[in-house]
Image 1 (cartoon, rainbow, N blue to C red):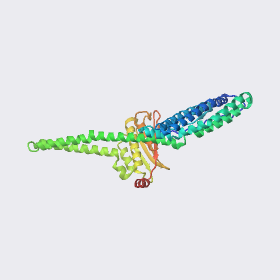
Image 2: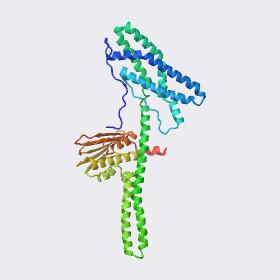
Image 3: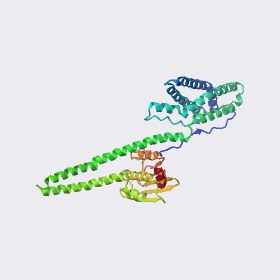
Image 4: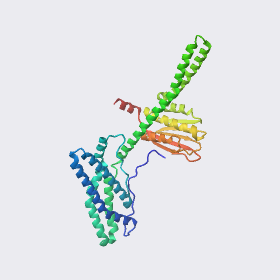
Length: 396
């Protein structure tokens, strides 16, 4: 289970054409015969859309009409990709959707007007009409005149179709998909930050703040009894002293949850050794790093291991565990292993799905290998960033 899957794009490998009318040959013939009506519908649509948008562009509704027409062209492109998938065995990833969240109507219209997917589909439908006429006529004639070599003709013509679909109807490149992923990841980061702020606020309100309020009230009562009942006042002061210690401990725990001082001062080795000492099972920590990564990467690694060790304590029933940290080229690698009962997963309600989302938001990976009966091995990786480079970027 990982936070990211590989992009699969391109065509399935087809067997070579031969003197036989097999299932794939009949699919290709059907595709070529459908080309004429399909290209006619597409051509009429894009010409009408461009004409209407151009004529109305002198008014306020012209650009929204054109943007709406480009959105319709996207649907035509989806239909053509589906036709190529079903009849030509060509599997093309769907382009990323246009961003919608939190945008004004003007921004949506502008995004629609500059949509490269829509414009490439318009170009595809515009040039398809003469090709559709040609392939329809040639295929229809071959059914009666060139029957023995029709499988070879159909394969040659549909290979040209495959090339057009790949060139004009596939996503621009991996950059377009990465943009969509980053849009989604940005939402994850915002949601995670908001949840962390709510947690800190709740911890302050229910923990240290409540204790400090009780402390102030206790000290007020002790002040009132100081002269008339010194023994009772002394007892209240003792209680207040205990409340101060508890409040300080809660504040330390809260600060450790935000960013532990030992991580800043001494790095991952000391910080992970500290957090592992609070695990309910013995943990062996091995950190093999010649240099320290950027503080943000250290923080991500620390909190990832910290949450995984909490899962070990709560859910694994393990006797031992280990934490390994090392660098592999431009990636920081983390691995947490335990000999517990296994059965962990992203859907198990142990917080791993949240970890996977957070690591995915920084272009990281999260892999869980946990068969029933154990052992459980969780491997995570995040991009390595040098402290010096991050410092230079922050100054810039």
